[in-house]
Image (cartoon, rainbow, N blue to C red):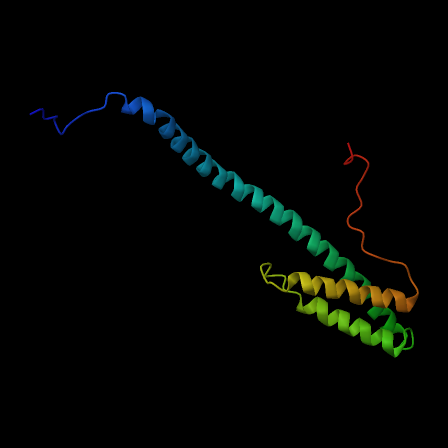
Length: 141
């Protein structure tokens, strides 16, 4: 009877698995590098988006501050309906969750603020809208 030893060693196995080993090693290295660069990229995008949201909210708050100053100087500067919309805008701005950016309602709240601002602008007959930060000609190059 021909018995083969149980400890058959395939001398070609390392060659056959070489491709898979390199693939797994490359995947692991790429994954680890991606975690590091992904966190930094995410941080940069978060800073940029946070700045843009803060800038837009600041625009609306600045307009509201000017209108409220006008009301303090002259109670009849705006109609009761417009003042009510301004108070609603003030409430929306004060309730915006600045310290909780992962709040699911952030987009809805920003849209409500934009809509309330448009209502006030239409009521005033003015054409003012937030268009983002203006870019200088140096940034265009």
